[in-house]
Length: 209
Image (cartoon, rainbow, N blue to C red):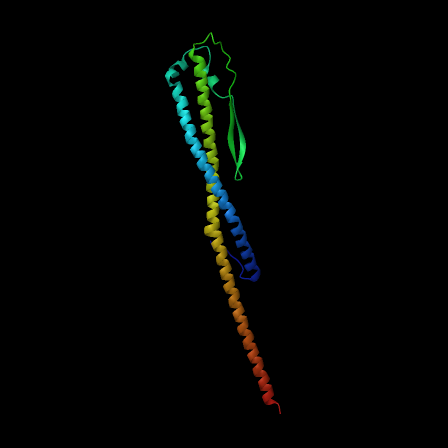
């Protein structure tokens, strides 16, 4: 829908000021878009690496996976799950993303002599799987945050470039034409008034004795 505006000199100034603000803001917005897109590509590349490391970690427990459901005097699956996952907020071009700090596990208290020999190794492998899962999940979350922000900024860039700035330039053009026409008409009226005044003066002079 076309914007409504007055075709006056104050409105012309307002539209010109608005266009200047758009022209100043748009390069900053595009720079932010580029920085976020680069970071998003980096995160997606890191995610592919994290997913590969997760597959490797899972492959290491495949040989004794059937043993994990057997009684071993310790709940390996529970001990292999994180007790707490810590992240810290990092600012990327004005966008806050969570970055994984550490994965914390509970104390694995069990008797080394009262459990099968594979328990200790399998517990470490299970925890490594959990670490890799947390790493991949964190990178996925970073990617979601960044992708959302990139999409939002692309929309804003398009709005400025394809809608607001063209509309403002068109408003400036229309107002200038209107003001030019008014000035031309005013000049024409002034000439006609002057010519009429001269005619009146000549008539007075002709009628004088």
